[in-house]
Length: 119
Image (cartoon, rainbow, N blue to C red; front, side):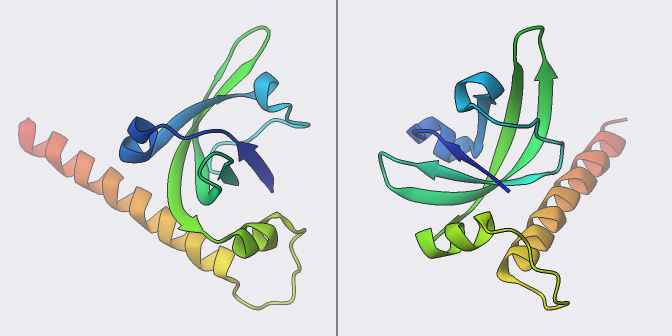
């Protein structure tokens, strides 16, 4: 799992979405849509879960739109960043990922219903 280090503005915290540059972050590999990452705000010394919601390719860089999830402790962030262990047990990371997936699904269904009602 990757860690994104970026200062979060009050606007970013309210809208729970931010854009990050692959080049500026110095990522060793590309991120995939739906991939989970840890966001660390060094100014507030806070950690958040996040998911790659969208990406945009340019010749010299890739921009990722991340949707912020829940705030987590530094210890939890360290656990998220450790290589996964496949011992069959459900981890906190698994539960958070499932909750975020459920939240995104609910938003998609709500948007589809609103669009249906508009027509």
